[in-house]
Length: 278
Image 1 (cartoon, rainbow, N blue to C red):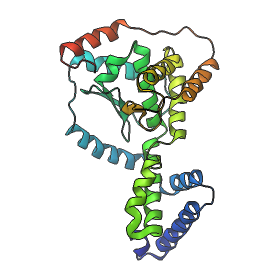
Image 2: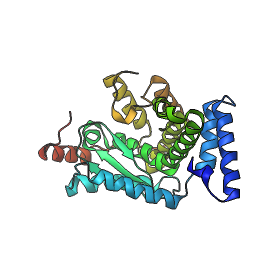
Image 3: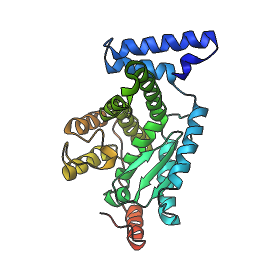
Image 4: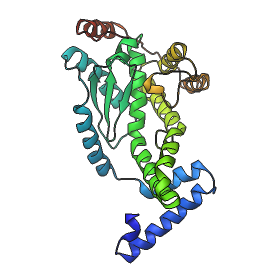
């Protein structure tokens, strides 16, 4: 409750108003949607603050993962990433792309735009468009600053939880996290899918690759069973696949590409380096 103890009267009033608003949201004003919107509005951080957080997160990651530094692999992923950036919506951040030696089918973005691609994702892709589709999805999270929005929701949840529950806040925080309130929301995931489809279309990649990759994971892991880390909170259900394909159907006709030759060369190189798929 440090915000309420501040000696500045105006800050005290502002803090009390914020907490009253959060209390109303949590006690049934309009459910989680109202709480999400209110928290994002009141506690949203600036791009510069997000950059500082991103640097801290990156420092933690750098000390915990094994990076692939092979020039063929890294340059390939970065070339695909740069192609997508050139055709993506405007962003406050310039993404950087890294390859992690990990067999899980995964990619993730951290605050301020660094995007990490697992070797397992590269190995699992049938063509370059599928790998590009996952990267474009993660770029969607960066462009719309979903990490910062999640942090704002987290801040609101912490303040409201401490106000309402005091010492019992810890158990409630776990509950909120388990239902996704402190992670990407379904709205975040849908928005990232929309940005990915549009970006792939403009870059000349077949945007249906996002749906085919979802379908591949759904076949491998099931609709709601054990799922790849990339889809741990919001797995590629039939509804989500159909949603992506509905977006693709609305796009103007175009000649798309789904290249494989460069990907196969990189996949072979990963095998030579000992980073074979699971």
